[in-house]
Length: 90
Image (cartoon, rainbow, N blue to C red; front, side):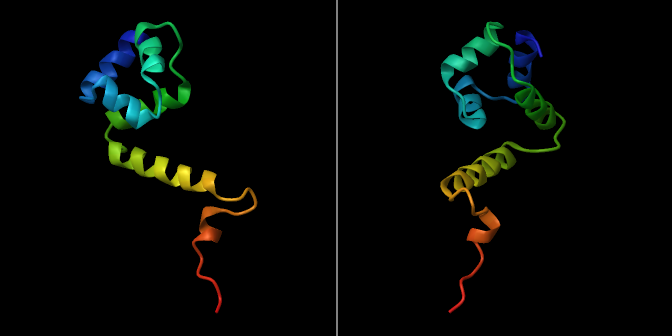
């Protein structure tokens, strides 16, 4: 994805730079580098934007996935999220 395509995708999604930063979990510096073509947009971000543009997922889906990922990172390495959400005996 070129810098022009990246900017066009954000425009089509009606995302301001600040909204895109929050949604993608990146800094404004990273956003500028991608938008100016100084750094390549990672493939995972390209796929995410394409799914958003195609209407296959929503921004709310992305936000929900980020919450789950944050919760998982808080767990011990040996525990999974589903294991941690299981009721305890007793």
